[in-house]
Amino acid sequence: MKNTQVPVLLLIIFEVSFSPSLFAEQELAFRLLPGAAIPLGRPNISAGFGAGGSFDWTMFPFAGLTIGGGYAGLPVKDGTMLTLLEGKAGPLGQYRITDRFTVRGEGSIGFNRKTWGEYTDSGLLLGGMLSAIFHISPYLQVLGYGAYTHYAYTAGPPMQTFMVGAGISLNLSEILGRKTRVSGVKTLQHMIFPVSYAWYEENPVAMVTVTNGEPNAITAVEVSLFLEQYMNEPTLGAVIPLLSSGESVEVPVTAFFNGSMLDLTENIDANARFIIDYRSLGSLKSAEIPVRIPIYHRNAMSWDDDRRAASFVSARDPTAALFARLTAVAVEDRMKPDLSRNIQYALGLFEALQVYGINYVIDPASSYVEMSGDAMSLDSLNYPYQTLFFRGGDCDDLSILFCSLLEVLKIDTAFITVPGHIYMAFDSGMTAEEARTRFSVPGIDPARDFIYEGGRVWMPLEITVPQAGFFQAWRIGAREWKSAAAEAKLYPLKDAWILYPPVSVPGAGRRRPTMPAESALTAAFDSSLSTFINRTGKR
Picture 1: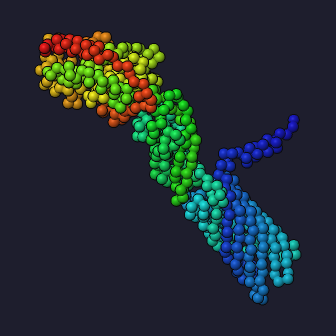
Picture 2: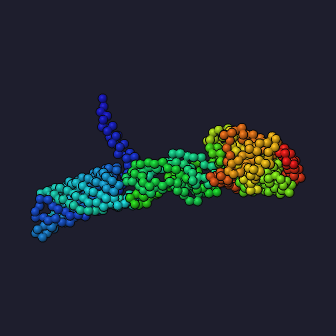
Picture 3: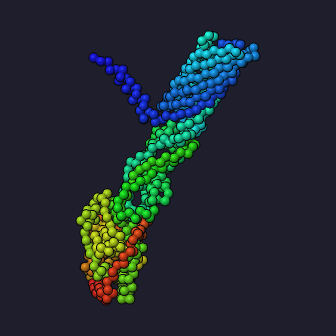
């Protein structure tokens, strides 16, 4: 049987020696070591001055190789000078006690040449050194040392010296390469929706695990994100005051996006960078880590927070603004003095949409019934101008449109959510006492047919039934609110906008809506207003 132990051993040595993970801490440094050279056992030779220099290659955090040389001049009692020149190499081992202090031991073997007047001799040398190192910065260290050397010669007797002194060490790898030893790994990616781009300034787009690979603790660690084109500058997401060597911590990363996000009509995987700035032994370092950030198109949204839809509601949508103002002009001279103008404006807009030809269309791919049951499902919502252009939408689209129209007229609105459905409400413009007085008639219960929250009297309106007329849309909306009981939620848009500000997308005003004929609009308004007044008992 063949002996395979030697090849296997060589393979193991090769794998260990050239493993990238073990070589991750390779460094090259230069040391300058002046000091006092003291001869041992030579009473006729006095102590003198010496100096040495070496290049130190630390292949691992704890071990490496050193190669260098030195000079020593030793006075002899007869007035002459003994000089020693040497070149040597050997292994070193070190241990970092604290962030600033390291102890090191090293051995050496080499050649030396002795000169005393006209006499010269040469031979081998063996030696060792112990040193204590103080790290001023990643680039500069100072050290104190003691070294013993045994010199052997071909002709003369051997000689020993002890050298003690202080020196400096320059980390050439740091000086030339500006090494950074931190890593950042994206551990969680949140969904990013352009419509909510302002929300991410205070809320995380991702979670990042930062690991300190420096041999010392680092301080003032700042983690930022930069996404060119969609951000004007990096956004600082987290600050870590202190991170010990080898320690990891997970932090959130935020983003201050710009309005270019609203140009996105398709999903993209954007090239971004995590920027980690920190101080290592007082020196500022910075690492940039490339990362891919998925961003959805500008109509995308999830229902993890129903208030997100508030960003789609905008009084600045030019198409919605034109539709609302032209409708208001057509109906305001036909309003009745004994009924809240807010209600009459809402009635006029509701009937204008019906005459315009708006329709309730369930989106089979992303209906609210299905999407609201899964907070992480991706939905696609229309902006007001899109719903007007398509002349239809599902419950969220129509609610967004109608809220936008009323907001154009400075009438506050709200979303209502009940299980499987979203619709809207608006500020009736009445006080609680006015509502009770005005609508205390048979078949209507002011205490339950309106919503009293935040000092307002809200009128619920089921916007998905445009053909039913305004009065029936109110009655249906009130019934849905009462039926849902504690599960019904009211989200005033002004409150929701604090978290999810409204946006207006590029291109929203390129196509003007074809308004209904004013005669048809006013006829629908007059008929609906008459029905409403008749059904509420006030003529």
